[in-house]
Image (tube, rainbow, N blue to C red; front, top):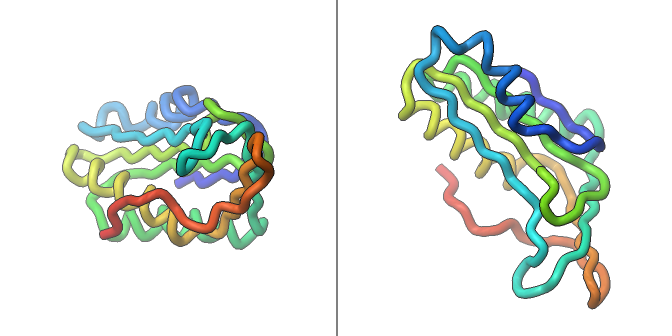
Length: 145
């Protein structure tokens, strides 16, 4: 279950295709989520963002989420990628792939993973826009199971 923190641009569709190849015959479902940086947040224009993390701790938190998802849901594999460093609107920030014999488990696990990631993984975001810089103090609304 690869979990990767990267300061290089992510290539979501390539990573998902490559990681999913071994599961093509055994898994009837492949569900993915790709989170992309927006150019605004709460009505404020954003030109770029800087994501900070705590190496080791962030990696372990992602690995723990992947392990927990496999224990909780009937899934074969998980791919978690997260970008750190400077990003711009349109850049891919997070990639989640879930492979399972059945679609219900894959959809549920993917949704659970993004919500848990947003609330439990130690990442800090600083936004930069025409009106200055701002640390993000709250996540966007979502559902947490």
